[in-house]
Length: 324
Image 1 (cartoon, rainbow, N blue to C red):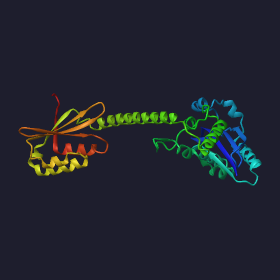
Image 2: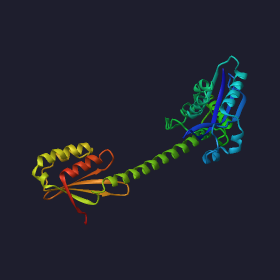
Image 3: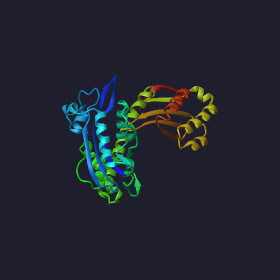
Image 4: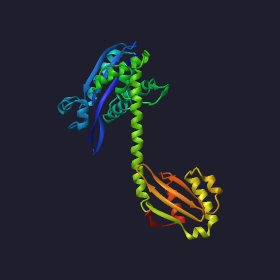
């Protein structure tokens, strides 16, 4: 069997009123049955309708528009690639490997666009990203299913930076897979650093999402913020009905003090207020008795905001701005 590690660079090209991901470079590293590196393949590709590289791809790949414009079209490059494979494979089976699903998806889409026979070959590409990431564990646990090529190079002790060149990336994939197959020791310090960095990004991401969520919730609750809601006269006249609704509401918003609400006698006053802080939006229910007062707090989230609005609007008169 012939083993081939393949990578391609691509860019979005506007075709027929929409953007299509088109291949601009193909690189491959070919090995024999014992995974000994025999030869390499590299070619730029000029997409149909190509005018210029996007700024992001130009910065990442260091390719120039003139280089792409001078390159052959995908069918010609795919023909040369197939001939190169057959020269070494003969009657042997060929196994292609890539890093991530994008290579197979883009190559197949380009082959289909040109009605080229290589689509079946590219459809059989084996994605190694998840497999190579599976060995990366922190305190015995897999903490991410798909690490980047750059992270895996560091963890598998492969020297050099990822430079987003199709041939260079294909060779990097071969070297990482070799380290995986040989079960070489991983760089535990690099794993620890990666874990802490990812956790920090997750925490920061959660905080950012929470801030955005709070801003949307504040808009949704704008008519109730910084106001007091006093239990309406109709609720006082229908206390049993209100109390039953209060228990149901407490269960809907997962208020932990439902049991104590059931056991409380009828208060002389019930008040609802909302407080908007930097990192929270909170509803307070205050039950006042002759000699004591009980306060219940409910953090407002997407899952309970409608329950809270409906309950407050149904049973409370919200008229007075908070001045104390």
